[in-house]
Amino acid sequence: MNLTRRNFVKLAGIAGLVGLANGLTGCGNNSAENRNVAEANKFPPNEKAKVYFTKTIDAEHLIAIYKKINSDIVGKVAIKIHTGEPHAPNILSPEIIQPFQAQVPDSTIVETNTLYAGPRSTTERHRRVLKTNGWTFCDVDILDEEGDVVFPVSRGLHLREVAMGSHLANYDSLIVLTHFKGHAMTGYGGSLKNIGMGCASAKKGKRQVHGLEDFNEWVMGKTFLELLSDSGKAICDHFGKQMAFINVMQRLSIDCDCAGAGAAAPVMPDLGILASNDILAVEKAAVDMIYNFEDDRKNDLITRIESRGGRHQLAAMEQLEMGTPNYEIISID
Image (cartoon, rainbow, N blue to C red; front, side, top):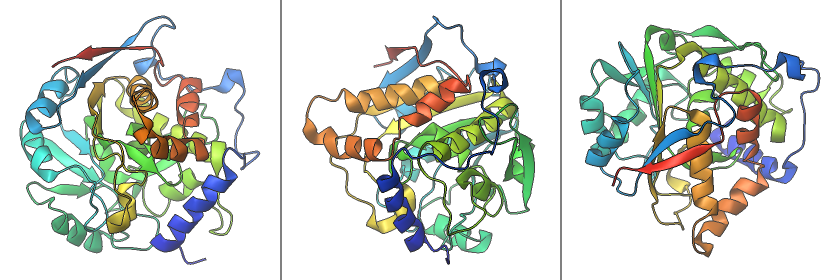
């Protein structure tokens, strides 16, 4: 199969039918004694992680909430954002991101090329899309422009290593600045998706995360989400405490920004910004906020999450001890 973006989206639809089906047997020993432990981000069982919240989505509040979680952000800083397919209607606005990036010393927006054939599958074409979508106010580092580098996954659920874009190793700290939304394969795309797939190199790392040996044999359901979690775990282990996670709950389409101009219009209203130093806590807070929304405008997004078994991302991160599902919301408003 030629992996075009159209075929990729078609396969994503199949993922919804497969739901929670398992696959890729024999890829790794996931027994209790071999579960990965991210000591840098591990919380005692009863301790609650702080998740900061603001209902206002603008540059001023984005900067303010970031300052609550930036104490360990030092040195050369990567800001991972999904910059979107051409003319994607729901991406984070460069007008908000520009003043944010400007106040983070020695920072660079980072991205990787896509596995599927399309406008972002090569660095040259990707740079044209960046210009089209307004990412022109600072340099954008295409992490896999010069190949990949292996990050180990200590006692992962399936993977023992993942190929990341080689430039990622040049950074001291990582800010994961995520447009939280639905996703055709993972149910929802949050901080985990932003790094687990978004930092993996196009031709090698993304194939590992998808469990791909043959484009006609795609890993779906729980196993795919566990592979994604393994990849995110490798990045969290690498950067340790020098990470900050921000989920922007804006334009909550059922589709990812990789769907491009055809992404579904949001039904839910914007909810605000969540930020934490704990990836599991901030992710669970975002999912809980959707499920706890007061009326049925949440139904389309919840259906998308449920049909793909999306909440298994949370279970896999907890199994990998990437953080804590226990959190307290602290409003900065």
